[in-house]
Length: 452
Image: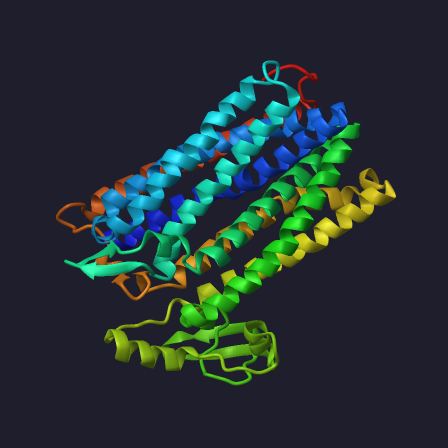
C-alpha cells in the first residue's frame, strides 16, 4: 500500500481504539457526580461505596484515554501535513481551547477529587466531581466544534490555498455541532450505563449481592436506558440534518441509488457499486421519507443523481463512498441501539421483581452486552468519517490532497509507525482490561472514608 492508504489505516485504527475510552469518560463522570450528590443529600454510605468503586474504573479509563489521545495530534503533523496546512487556522483554535481550558479543568479537578476525600467537605467534594464532568464534556464539545467544520464548513474564507477563520462565532454556532454533540454526549451516557450494568452482572454472577452491587445494577440499567433513548432521538435529528447537508452520506448508508418521493427504507441490501444498483435488497415503502421528513412523503436524493450533480459542481471524480461498508455499519449501529434498549428495560424489570440473581443466562448476556455501546460508537464514527469520502473537509479538500508528501514521509515510515503504535495501543487497552478485572476480583470497594 502507498503512504495515503497506510496513513488512512493508521488514523482509523488509532482513533477507533482511542474512542473506546472517550464515551465512557463522558458518561461516567456525570454518573459519578449524580451518585455522589445522592450520597451528600441522603448520607447513605451505599452511594459512597458505589462512587468509590466505579470511580476507580473511571480513573483507569481516563488514564488510558489520555495516553491514547496524545498520539492523535502527532498524526496530523506527520501523516497529514497538507491537511494541517490547509486547516490549521480553523482547527487550531478549538483544539487549543480544548487543551487549555476544558482538559486542564478536568484533569486538575480529578486530582483534587482523588485526594480530597478526607480533606474536603462532602458537598465540596461532590462539587469537584461536577467540575470534572463539566470539563470532560466541554472537552468533547470543542473537539466536535473542530470536527463539525470538516462536516459542514462555516465561518471561513479561502485565501492563499488555505481555509482561514472569518468568524469564530460561526464555528461555535455551526448547526452540525448542535446535532452531533448531543448524540455523542448521550452515547457516552449509554456507554457508562452498560459498563456499570455489565460489570455489576459479573459481580452478581460471582455471588456478590450486597446492597451497593444491586443498586449499581439498577443505576447502570437506568443510566443506560436514559442514554439509549436519548441517543436514538438525537441520532434521528442528526440523520435528518445529514439528509440535507451531506445527502450522499445518508444515501450510501441506506443503499439508496435512485431519487424517490416517497422513498423506501432499505432493510437489507448487497450493493453493486460498479453498476450503481443493489443486486439484492429488501425495502419498506415510504419509510425513508418518514425518517427524513416525519411524514410519509418527501423526496430523498439518490446516489446516481448526486454523483452527476457533484461531478458537474466539483469536477470529475467518484463521489460515492463505499456503499456496502456504510450500509452495514449504519444498520449494525441501529441494531446495537435496539438491543441495548431491550437489555436495559428487561434489567430494570428484573431488579424491580427482585429476581436479578436468578437470571444467570441474562446476566451472562449483559457481560457480553458491555461491547454493544462500543460497537455502536465505532460504527457511528466509521459512518461519520467514511461517509464523507472522498472529502476530508467536505467540498473543500479531498483526502488525497491532505496527506503528507512522500518526499517528507515515506510509505515505509508510515508503515513502521502504524505497526508500532497499533501494538502500543493494543497493549495499553489490554492493560486497562487487566486492571479493571483485577479491580473486580477485589469484589468490594475500599471501606467508606478511606482514600484511594
